[in-house]
Amino acid sequence: MGLRAASPSCAAAAPASAAAAAGAEPRRRPRRRPGLGPPPLALLLLLLLSLGLLHAGDCQQPAQCRIQKCTTDFVSLTSHLNSAVDGFDSEFCKALRAYAGCTQRTSKACRGNLVYHSAVLGISDLMSQRNCSKDGPTSSTNPEVTHDPCNYHRGGGQNPPNYLFCGLFGDPHLRTFKDHFQTCKVEGAWPLIDNNYLSVQVTNVPVVPGSSATATNKITIIFKAHRECTDQKVYQAVTDDLPAAFVDGSTSGGDGDPKSLRIVERESGRSVEMHARYMGTTVFVRQLGRYLTLAIRMPEALAMAYEESQDLQLCVTGCPLGERIDDGQGQVSAILGPGLPRSPAAAAWPGYTLETASARCHEQMPVKDIYFQSCVFDLLTTGDANFTAAAHSALEDVEALHPRKERWHIFPSSARAAPRGRPLSSVSLGLTCLILVVFL
Image (tube, rainbow, N blue to C red; front, side):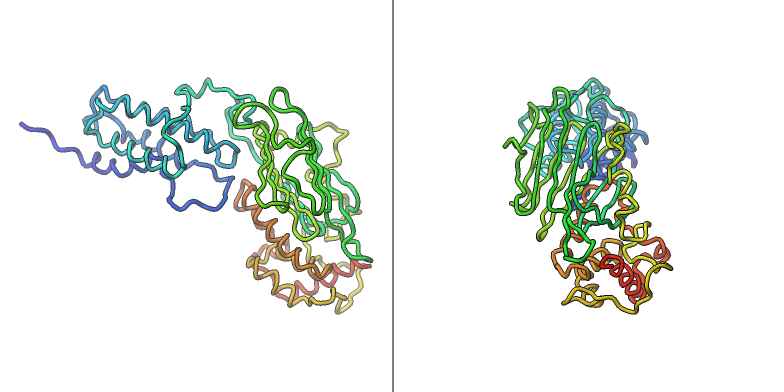
């Protein structure tokens, strides 16, 4: 009678399963999008399983071929991983090696099976994309029993954590954990974060004589001791001294590999990152011009773990009302208030007009959101072009660390109906009023 031809569903499954079993990851990887993680991999694999494309009966798969079990194990090993977390590549490579080993053990039984061969090719492709070596440690095939107390994402929790973002830049502009945007004075030392796991304090100094605008020239970060994961580590940066090490000279905390806490220098003397694996937290510190910027991503459960005595935290509550120099609603182009003088013009810093400042900021920030307006404000009040780079890098940090893409850009409440920016005359009036507030 001869062999029965493969069914149409089997032929269609081959290319689809190749992509799914291999991870269905695009060739062109984005620059950095930590909040996105690898859901397409797990979702596509689970979709194939749920649709029955890997069922033995549909493709005449021999009963002893265990490719479906290999794929199911791989899904279990990778579904919880998040590319924003330190150590992702290491864990993903371990899972890929385990997947490859499983396919090798069932190779004889799966000879001629389209799904099997698609998986083998896909594994090889992903190995190359992730620069995974063929030799090395592999993940356990029972991921549910895997427990790592110094990896926040493998410490026994079932649901992925909800992340929060906080950033400080310019003179200074604050984005709180609640995505509120404020422009503040806050001269001197102020706590940004002070919870049971982390303490971050910034020191701000006046930028221009006679102005209430300030900028950050010192940042102190304390990673508090956490059981067996790390001893207390203190990091301190000041203008022109942005070290790639903690105060004690070390560059990491905790035993084992990967480290529970480590510092990575991105640009010597200009940019460092701190990755606290044991609490799923990432901190960026930069120097731009004479001043420092900071951005942090932290699980909400840890960010909100503090006592009543720790209630003064700018990232949590924002700047005190008496320290704000905007309209209180995140609008740097402040609304003209009844108590402000209705002067047709304000004395901007020599060298910049509203038009030239707007043009300079627009070169790096085409979307006229709150970061663009902050840039314009900073140029008009200080005349320092480094604040343009500060606003641009602050937006880049948001895109790298903020978990929700739809919240990357913030627009003044009165401009929400036209998110691409208000007419220049409207911005001019608002900035004029705000500059008067700053200098008077």
